[in-house]
Image 1 (cartoon, rainbow over the protein chains, first blue to last red):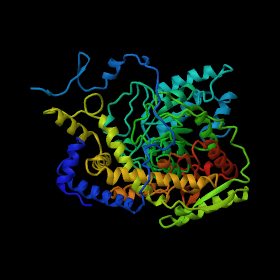
Image 2: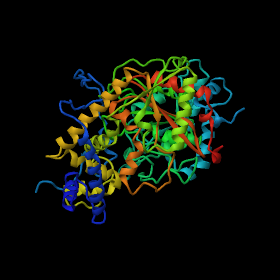
Image 3: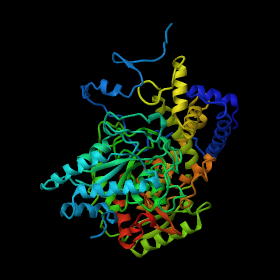
Image 4: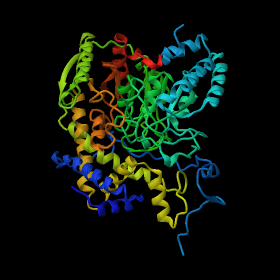
Length: 96
Length: 487
C-alpha cells in the first residue's frame, strides 16, 4: 500500500490538520510504511472470529440514576479557553 | 543513617512513622536533588516546590496523630498526563503548554488522600506516543545510567526521576509498554495493572481500550503500597471495573514453590539482544531454585501484536484527540480566517510530528472503505492474541520473558524510522491488547545498562505478580543499584 501526496492531503483534511509543504513528503513516506507494516494482519485466519472491542469479557456500560452530580464550573473551565465572552466560547463567524 | 534517597518508599514510610526524620526534611531533600540534578536529565516539566513543602508540613502534623493515612508525608511525582487541579498539565505537548487543569485525576486525588506530597510533574512523550521520550515538546529525557541514552517512553520522565533518586516513586501510564519499557531501561520496578483496575478519570486519553495507569518504583513492595491507594472502582471512569481490591502487601511474602512459569517462546526468538537474553534466563533459573517450575509456552499470534496495536491505538487516538480544537482549551492559532482554518492550524501547530502521524494513521484506517480491512481485522486479530494468552493461563500461573529487545539505545538512533521505534514495544504490547496486568523488574546489567524481566499474569492477578516480583527482589540486589552520577 503506497499513499500519494493527494491521499495524505485528503487524510490531513479529514483529521483537521494543517500540514505544511515540507512535512508532506515525510508523511507520504512514513504513513505508507506503516500501512505496509500493518498488512501483516492479512496473514491471520480471522473467519468467524468475533472482533474484540473491550479487553475484559462481559463488561457492559453501567447505568446510573439520573441525578445531578456535578456543580457548574464553567467559569473555572473557561479560563483555559483562548477567547471567551459572556460565558461563550468565541470562534470565527460561521453563518453569514 | 542511610542517605534518605537510598531508601525505598517502604523504608521511608517506616522512617517517617518512627519520626526518624520529618516529611519536610524528606521533601526538601528530594527538592534539593531535583534542583541539583534535573538540568542533566530533563525529567521534570513542572516542579511544585512551594505546595510540596506546605503539604509536607501538613503531613508532619498528621504524623503526630495516630491515624495518619498509609502514605502520609511520602514524596511522589506524577506523569504529566494526570490532571492536577490548578497546576500546569501538558501531556508533553505544545497543544497543552498553557493548560491549567481545573480538577484532579482520580489517581492524583486518591494518592493525595493517602497522604503523598507531590513534588511535580514528569516529562513524557507527547500524548504518551513514543518509546524513547524524544517526542516531548519539552525535549528528550536522558537516561541516568548513561546520559547519551534514552530512558524509554512514554513514562520516561517518571522513570528517569525515580532511577536518579529525585523521587522515591512516580506514577505512569501504559498503553503499549509505556511503564514497563522505561522501567526496564532505567532499572526500575514498573507495574501496569489490569485494564480497568485503576481509574482513568482525569488521565488524558490516548487509546481508551488500552490505556492504564500504574507505578514506577524501586521495589515490588513499594508498588504494592501505592497500588493499595490507587486501585479500585471509580464511577467517573466508565471502564473502571467493580472488583474488590485485595491486600497487595499481605500477599508479598507467599512462597514461590510450585509456581508454574510459562516461558514465552516467541520472546526468545530473533531480535532479542544476546546479553539481555542471558540475564533473563539467569533470572528464570533463580525462580527454579526458589521452587518454581518452568514450562515453555507458545502464543502463535503474538508476533502480530505490533501491527494490531498500530491499527487499534492510532484509530482510538484519532478519535480521542479530536477534542483539541483550539476553542475550549489548548493551543489556538493566530488570526484564523474561518472555523476550518482555526481547527486545522491550531491542531497542525499544537501537535508534534509523531502525534500527527498517529492521528492520520488512525483517520485513514477508520475512513470509509478501509474500516473492515484495517480496524475490524485488527480487532479480530486482537481477539486471537487475547485467546492465546487465555489458553496459556489455563496451564501456568504467570508468563515471563524479556521486557525490551535491547537495553537503552542512543538518543536520536531511532527517531527517523517509526517502524523501528514501534518494534521496541514488541514484548509489551500483547498485555495491553489482552488487558492483562504485567510488570518489569530489573534482572541484571548489560555493561552499565539495566535489563528488565517481564512478568505477565491473568486479569486481576496484581497480587500474584507483586508476590512473584518480591520473591525475586528478596534474593537479588539489582533494584538497589544507583546510577554513578546520582549516588
